[in-house]
Length: 318
Image (tube, rainbow, N blue to C red; front, side, top):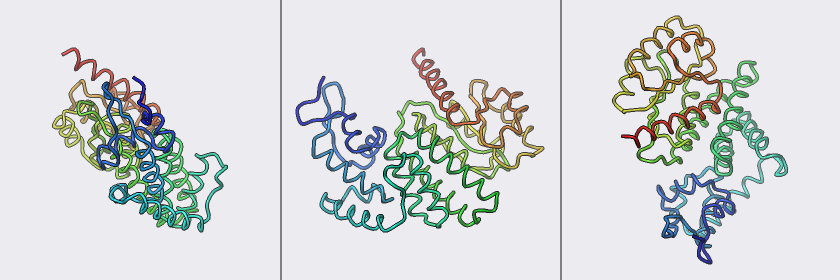
């Protein structure tokens, strides 16, 4: 059924505001940013006033401000806030607006890391999230940014404090991205963490955000959990799958037995996926236990889609 005159579907609102449909949905459900009209078929439609309001909220949030703090403000107050933030932004060194978007975000983010500017880094990444699909942000902005930061640090071209500031800020953005994703209450659940003695968790957080953006419910456990605790969490949460990230150390003699014990403790129908930059060093045992191994989020995303379809089909058959 077409929208009534003066009402606009999600697709048009997304085009005009620069907000993705997922962000729109999250802002409506969590923060009551606007109240769209529902058609008889349940589709959401927005007024011109809704679009104006969402555009102001979008512009204000690009400065790194929390949407929960912006929603209570009236439109004139938002407009003044935007003007103040944009005036401050123009005084900073930035990238040209005619550069391709991805290169612009990466360049701006790296400058922020080098200049120890956490606010600018978070602002840049949030802007990317609001303007690009989540999978593109993860694959083409945050993933390459983390790789570059790690490479610079290993070469001694980036101070440890700058690297810590960057990873702390990126961690905060990933949590925010996961919160934006609104999963169906009956969606399959993925437990995410790292095995014992694996302390680096950003790979696991990337996996968790990928799953949330793919429509999964996610239980994120953090780093350094032994096999029995991981298996207990999966069973207690009634999860459909478990995702682990392995980064460092890459020569842990105890990890193969840890992974074998984990697979033995998990129900046979629970999917197990292992990724991360260090996973290739344990490929033999990963194959032995029948786990899936991915070197990119693209492969994991495809696997999640297949698993979700299987889970929904199984539920429908019952």
